[in-house]
Length: 243
Image (cartoon, rainbow, N blue to C red; front, top):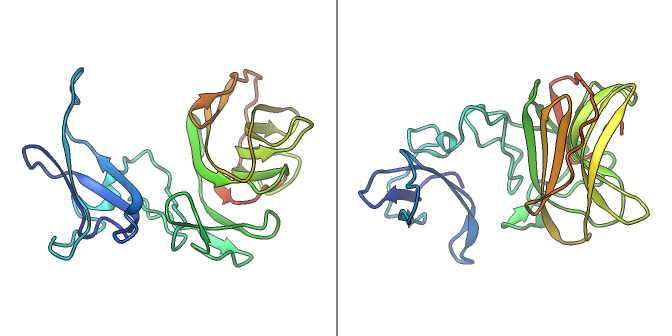
């Protein structure tokens, strides 16, 4: 559910925008995102009051001041939990379209339900960023030592411009990569992973000479090869298109 009947406030009852993601009151599971207002203290602690979704709370519309969409700043291109649908939760309303009929929320995920892709014919497409700096993030589960893209943009062919967060395969096993190509050069960095567990992966592209991947907050060595890819603005979720 989106913010709905859940609440978050400061100790002085200042209400905060919040997003309750895949919340299950009975199982006591889910993910809560809160957008803090004001300046955080340089030291000590600040208290956040959380009121889980219950019928006694007034419902908050997703686009309201304290609704779920306002939890995300304008620089978010999109956020797709894929727990029940392919909708974006940010104010961009950048909903994804499906190819190959993947089932939204069809499997058990790290937080509630998740969506599984076959790594070949099933994927989602939405509008992606068109310039750097940019960051891709995903909770993902890799079931084998194979090469697949988690989040990727390209220009629709296998030999030209593309960048993204992808999994790879090699002699040392599966890996996560921040990868980029401009048609003549291909650059990536790798962190090796254990398959068949949920992991948090990040790919950061600062500029034409800086790309770094992170696995469960551990960074790779920065790749500094000079590449200036110019992919189109379609982002693919769940499959590699052209690697």
